Amino acid sequence: MAEPFLGRARRLAERQLASIGQTFFVYDPWVGLVSIVVLAVATPRLAIAGTLASVLARLTAQRLGASRAFLDTGLAELNGWFLGLACATFFAVGPGLAVSLLLGGPLVAALSIVMYRVLATWDVPLVIGPYVPAFWLLWSALLTFPWTQAAALPLVPAAPASPFLLVLLGGLRGVGQIFFLPDAAVGVALAVAA
Image (cartoon, rainbow, N blue to C red; front, side):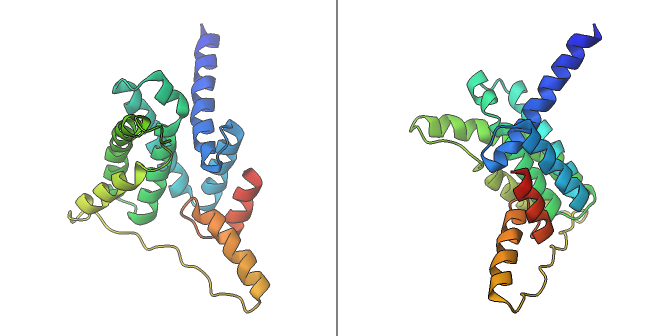
């Protein structure tokens, strides 16, 4: 009896991780796992928020009766991942962040389903578009409450004098910025993961 449960749990975890791996346009659970681990080391808040919103988005998409074709794309989870990263970046730790994640996962799943259906009529692929309006709605609504605070954004170090280092570090920070963290070391780790 334990084997079927463990096998099902493993398949669910692999699907979730592979969906997150699509950040690098690869549906691979190892890429997703290494990405989460890199973030967990650099900024655990981002890793936890992204993973939580991603799981909530998948559960919501299933409950809303999304088509098997849509669920198999992993786009609900991927949009949930990016929404969680955005929330953890821009909302300070506290009730505002918690509420944004709990509302955001289901919201981004619903927007993903709707946008998928609309765009499918024109054969336009859906990638990570839905997380942007979902985050905008959460940000606009939740900052009106006194229990929600904006987070201090990460600081980018001063630019080096060397043009070569400027380009190199700027590129690596850009890779880190994919996960809302403009850090060259994170960029190197994520590039290796990809």
